[in-house]
Image (cartoon, rainbow, N blue to C red; front, side):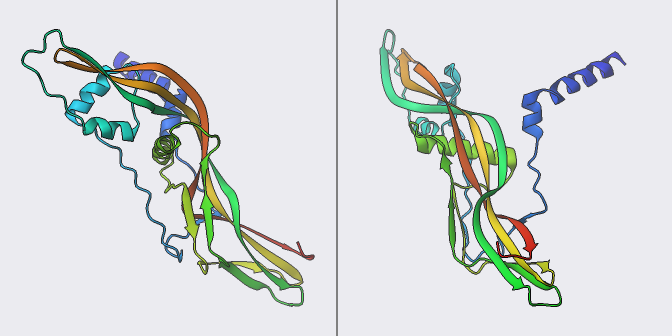
Length: 261
């Protein structure tokens, strides 16, 4: 019984901690948001950014650092690096500067905006009609929807990749910094415009707002005899945000009125 109570206590402690709740939370997609991937006349390429696995040598170097390193580009560089063991390396010392890098990104908040950008409006004037008129979504012109960082920062490409990986993992949504809705894209879902009314069907591209902190530092490869380690100097942190569009997901808003809008 004591073990059961202890186990329940540990579960409650983790379940109500902010980090645990943030990790298990899933984005709820409202009914007004529809997936148009199959109907989209412009086939968006899937934005796959696989988590790069470090080599054995790179893993040893990463573990030697006091600062967490998650930048895929830096890990790729370490994967391509080798340092041979020297049989008479006693007393040998070397410090190699590898550059100033964005080392990691720490997420603080991930939230969706389902009406990030209006991309289309379909309407029909049924003020002269005596029966309801059915209207459905048809994209009138191709629309490019772009996201991006909310501020200019060093190594912006590397930061974008880390933010995209983090947001995609947390939301389980198909995210990309650019998505396109092709002209002529349709959705069969219909909306009724009452008689004597004008109907408006607005379509919005959706996006995720990612906020957090990026850590920078100067990276050095330190060799002492046959020991190899990373040294991080001049570490700084900076808050950053980004808008990341959701691929092929549109939010629809329908309204009917007696007067033009």
